[in-house]
Image: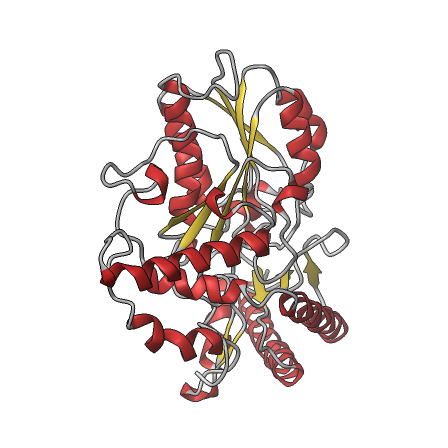
Length: 406
């Protein structure tokens, strides 16, 4: 790969699916050999553990500075899914065992939005199967959450609220700070899946005001296999993995040091991240302007509300999303119809259905997510290809309907 995730040397492909994953940055690739030299176990007290322990400590400090939190509030995990499960199940188990003095009383209600990632949705449904009172807050067609319903669901019985910072399919940003304040007014904890935030916005956990927050390395130009859970100082949550005392007893298992070093290196970029984000937003806006001016029947999802800088979700009338994706792929463009974790399913996106779109609309969706290295030239090449493919697919459909007399 020539750069960090935009154009691949194989077939000169153009990658526009950065919400699914990002390619390791040049910073990461340049230092992998150096990090491999620190091969020891960071828990060892002899010489082989000193270098690895230093890498672990440095990564934790860099991330603490980037996120504005205490480095010891960071728990390293295998990724976003594990972090979300640890937040939800770890708190639930601590409550069940009577180890959550921070929120008193008998609390058994858990609240989440109707468009959460499966790694939040499924553990919540598991809690429901165990007797928990799990409630969903709806969103409208543009992804805006219903704060009146949210307020009505909050009560002294609420244990935790889990709402993502930004939706991975639409890019819509939720009012996390306000929602966390509302949760705290009834004594509940607030967890935020912030996986889509890193690399796109400035993350300040103290300003967010959340108790727990999830992040992932491979969405932030680091290696796969590393994530982290921010857990506010003083919170007691049960480890999901029984074993050693790593991560201060909150996540057993020898740390994935190479991947941890990679996300620590990305955190060190600091102010550069915001400049890259501003550039992505300019390109995203140009992309949407070009598509709207050249292709009829395109409906941008939630464009009037705050979105992360790189994401554009749209419904294109008269085409099937999967067919569109495959035709674009054959022309060398990597995009998606929704979340990568749902790829291969014949069902339309649950997120778009939860937003009130019809099955037909949801099956005509397309998500384009730009990266740090995406260029203006690539945007124009993509719009040219999209225009041609959409016209071709619509002509086929019109021909079929004419033959059937529709």
